[in-house]
Length: 83
Image 1 (cartoon, rainbow, N blue to C red):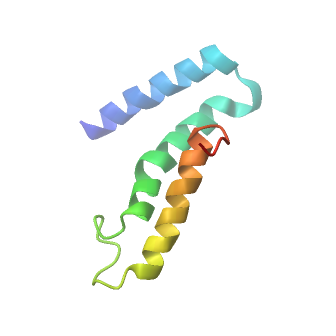
Image 2: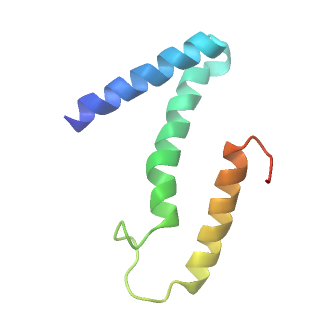
């Protein structure tokens, strides 16, 4: 079920990117890759304890890196605008 749902999502992303950008520079593949990264990998980077990637309570250096990653992701989503 999850696999078929992801296929539908990817198909829709590719269809919309083709309508918007055509086939220039493989944009339909870039958009699907960005979706995967932002939806799954970024979430695991920002909350590693939730995904079982780290154990224990010593997360102070990790939280500083997570905050930087969050700010970078937000800036990227806004198209480079910081506010």
